[in-house]
Length: 64
Picture 1 (cartoon, one colour):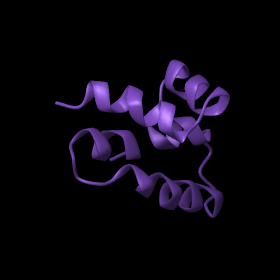
Picture 2 (cartoon, rainbow, N blue to C red):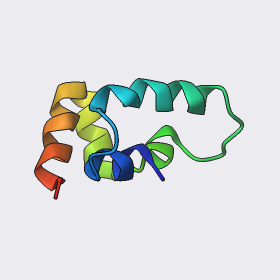
Picture 3 (cartoon, rainbow, N blue to C red):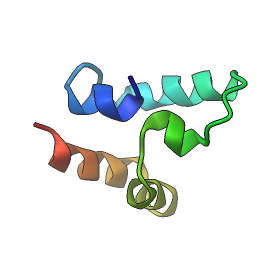
Picture 4 (cartoon, rainbow, N blue to C red):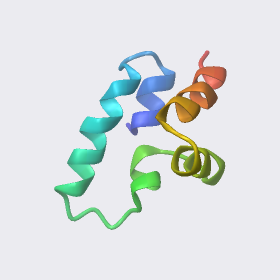
């Protein structure tokens, strides 16, 4: 499961994103970081252009 899937399911805290980034950095995964995390283009843009907090807000609105 991706970071986003696990976060939306309430399995992990948002801060776990750092562990996923580190895991991606230390792998040979051909996916982009956004794909690895499970983020769509809009979420990636907000994350890059704004902040972790802005991404968390978007994801929190999607939580079931």
